[in-house]
Image 1: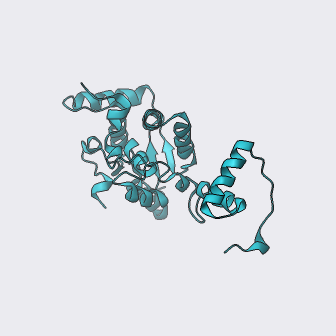
Image 2: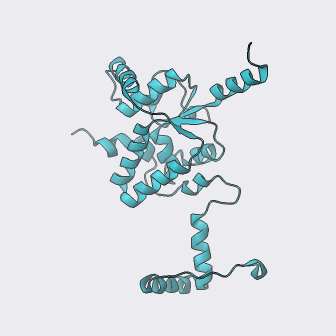
Image 3: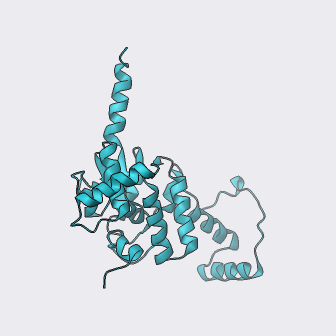
Length: 80
Length: 149
């Protein structure tokens, strides 16, 4: 539940394409455009009390459980 | 005059808890799919003093460029910049010579220059723990953090 008494109103400028895509996504999720923007923002900001670099934890999902053990293969290439 | 005991203790603690960070630890932290992601997520949330080299940063940046794109690669660099407990130890002539010495000592291994630079740095700075998932970083006997948790 959102505490409307402690909300700060602000304006953002979006391109027409961004605006349409955001509206579409909000409609799909059944939430307001404002709520969609708030949720998007929360994914970018570090969680409260967390150091700033923690927002990068899990920033990608490669699908490879051994990705950290196969760095040389990807960066330097594998031997034929 | 000898330094006060408290100063000696804090200096001892700093040496004791410092850890070397290898590329694999950074990738595991950033990649939700990696087996060790949860461990590194926990470790990086309350880290001790950390050290690494510019070669590790270059490798990590290269990984994101190859695996994803330049935007993700820049995001990786932003992650490094935000990690204030992580000290980047410069890599110049003396460090390169030390790394090459390590490479010659382990000529039977497929060590990269970045790996060798890390091994040389851990020896020079008496680092006792290595944040890595790469067995090469354990070649000189420094325990890998994945085996301690």
